[in-house]
Image 1 (cartoon, rainbow, N blue to C red):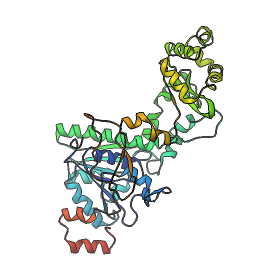
Image 2 (image 1 turned 135 degrees about the vertical axis):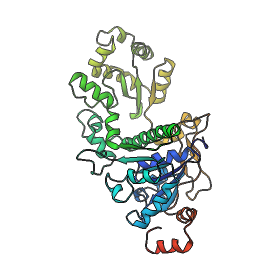
Image 3 (image 1 turned 120 degrees about the vertical axis):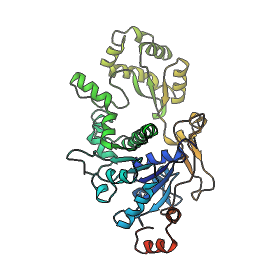
Image 4 (image 1 turned 180 degrees about the vertical axis):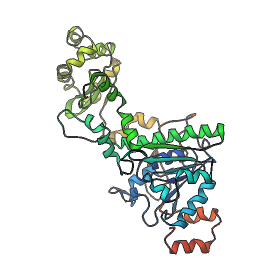
Length: 397
């Protein structure tokens, strides 16, 4: 894993979540990532707290390992010149600047691809780089609302609810990574770079693919389903003792029969209201009531174990403290402790895939603001006197 992208250099002008998640994964795969930040301020997520972890933003720490921090004022011609010099030798350039503002800073695709024709140029925006909303700023909850995700989240009758994780932001980072890796494959064949464009809105609309297809087929707007799914039942959460919850997903007739056997309710299999998935969907509420009357008699772990005996997919609804302690999560070694870091008891969530049983490569831990400015610019043959002059003008930091 450490060598997959080694030798590649990434210039990263992103902040918040989507772009940094993308560039962190490139670093995990072995690329050298130079994160360009504003002097004196840095990535906005450095200031997203509480909580602080060892005096630093836990959000920043989660998204910025395997990077070097270089502070440059992109609004100053001398700062733009530094980026141009870095781009000459870079392989990938990622930015999340508002469409149009990158060009005003001399960082547009046409300019940088002329400097380096083999450059993979990746642009991440909120609403895309076309249309009347292209210059509007956007964050994860705005796009969850605008793309329709929020209209589908929660229980029927509830106020609008955001999906609890930054699903649009992080998926945008993933889609950008997929685009970049595809572009690298093309470059290996042609020697030419290209532009990869992705936006939070495109990601949000992609997430509702199934619901859009259902609406286009039926003309009926999907409604909020809580933990359930509109096309199959029972496929949702059920209460257990102690106000705990378990998900039971009996997604076909065989699994429904197994569920009924486990709960000692074989009569449900022959009940005309529940004899096939289509009628179970129509009678979902009554089916849920009958099953939950039974599940309330079980401790959540006992119920999940019973489902396992009968090969019915099920699991508890875990809180994050249970996730950290979970035997299966720990068997996968996904949450990795890190020793000898300035933040004590630091742990990170590793790459969620393995190649030949290896996950990502921890080249370096999240950097302090401007930690590598002198190192990077010295590699570009900037003399010490010039560095001091640029610092005195706050062009670098």
